[in-house]
Image 1 (cartoon, chains in turn yellow, brown):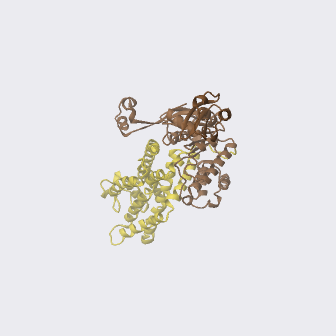
Image 2 (image 1 turned 135 degrees about the horizontal axis):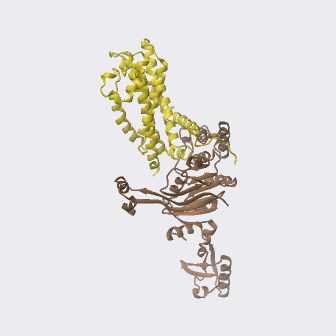
Length: 256
Length: 333
């Protein structure tokens, strides 16, 4: 029989490569859909104008607030429903019998959420630059902020798909119950000091990074951006490892 | 002969909600506190081996535990107890390494319906680490071989059930596996698709591939399998070649005879050397014989010597179905 597989299947690099194959699959199946893309574009555009026209909010807070909201909502929109959907479509069983670990499958889901979130969170930034063009932007900080926050929110979305259900609606309910309180306590469209529970929300640290990137001082002092990155990184890792651990526990219950 | 698969005392128990409650309440010994009813023994202490290069069939009625067994052998479910060795390696300790060399067509699994046939194969190729050039070559080869090359760019949701099943087989064969698991490969297919799939299974078997399939269809098992394990209520109740299983049912060799005057002397006939038992079913006699040819000669001779005219005579040989029903009803042979 012909042999044409060279990689060691358990090596980290191999599993990482295979997670990118899962990412491509997710992007093709779940994200590359007319309604999803249109919603991804329309949602930030509409929100941008809703918060810009007739409201006395400083442009920097509009941009950072909208970017945070869009990034959080888009990068956590599809991730929680992929597992229940694939359980229902009976494709998860096929995937699980491939030489990939649960972690690899989750990483694939994570990359696709991350890409989706990153792409659409730039829309408020681009609109802001066109309409206000008054910022001294630190592009590097903003791009890094978007990537690390997308990683944090996408990791968080993986936890939301832990319940071993095959009904996407069930995870949607959980998602709404968790996501909206996080948005409400976040300092959207206002300085961080104005929102008393803000430090609990991961969005706060992303907003702070964007504010710094748009020329405003950090709410957490001189090395505030460093603090923001650390917090988001810790949040990402905790969410990711929690998702790994919990999915390992529940995955077989999807087939029982 | 070396074994491709060794299964030792494999068990899978599912717990009912009451049992889960007991378990969650952290009672000292769950098994002691849960009653028999609280634990569903989907697979219970099953042991068998599959020789390299053979087609091994797991035959059983619906809900017997076939799919659960296959799911444990392919890494979908973790066994409650037992050991699985595939190609000399402990499967539970080397899941991914072994999954690299096995192919699988789960019964209820599906291809990605929003991807084309070709994209489905590409995805599976990537997940098995097949190099890009080989991946394309292999995908085209399989699509042609399985007769779905023309539909390669159509989304899988537009495929018929037979085409989807062929696509799933292509997906399982993308990495040239050494062991292939097929869960009900012909279930729900039309006759033509079923024949195509059976022929392809035979063809791959000739290349030396070890194939394990589950089915509740006796004909499929009889036609394809070198050995058959009969599973019922989670237990393996019979295991042998189809021929040997049939030998166990030799008492089912019979001649159905009807005579013109519709009467024979049973007491005279029963003493014939090859006749074992006679019973009357309607107008005909079912005569159980130890050998069909010799029994037939005996009866013709008997009819001649007693001036009886034979109206109709049919031979009746046991089928795998009889073995299956006997084993399922009795619980073993």
